[in-house]
Amino acid sequence: DVKVTQSSRYLVKRTGEKVFLECVQDMDHENMFWYRQDPGLGLRLIYFSYDVKMKEKGDIPEGYSVSREKKERFSLILESASTNQTSMYLCASSIDRGQKANVLTFGAGSRLTVL
Amino acid sequence: GQSLEQPSEVTAVEGAIVQINCTYQTSGFYGLSWYQQHDGGAPTFLSYNALDGLEETGRFSSFLSRSDSYGYLLLQELQMKDSASYFCAVRAPTDSWGKFQFGAGTQVVVTP
Image (tube, each protein chain N blue to C red):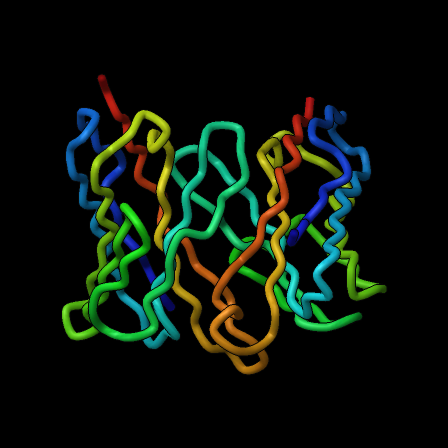
């Protein structure tokens, strides 16, 4: 069964801390995505990656960076966490071609609170 | 770019039919997808329309009309477990890869 695993379900961090959110998929998918979800705003794309070491900015990349050193792992980094980054973070993956390329498989999410 | 609009909330009774509309403004896209998300859960894929017309999957159907910039998700024979948020999404071409854009979501509340 297709699976996307996010390392932390809940995190509480302090303003200014560096935060790492890890995501691993076991489906050999080429594409991986990081979204944040806030009430009334839906899912907003932060970054996506279409291959190892490749990345592209989404709609709200400011304050975030990403790393993809291996195909199965996509990390989201908050260099200096701020309170406005308190949110639910969702990782997703998809294959690269064919009809299934339009299907995103999501992880369970990481709820980050920045104090 | 693209902008997707959907109603914020819909309430209906068990056994009823609910239609969630999604209108969009986009310069080009591959197709329209729908996702379901229960409270505290991950979004899960429901359906995808690459072409105009109706796609049926059990009690759920999805429709797309590119000429009208409009699509909908139809939930039939509503059950309590259908209470969830539903998101429409499009994937648009970029230079290297298409990225998905989501609507703000429609909260469906099913009452006994």
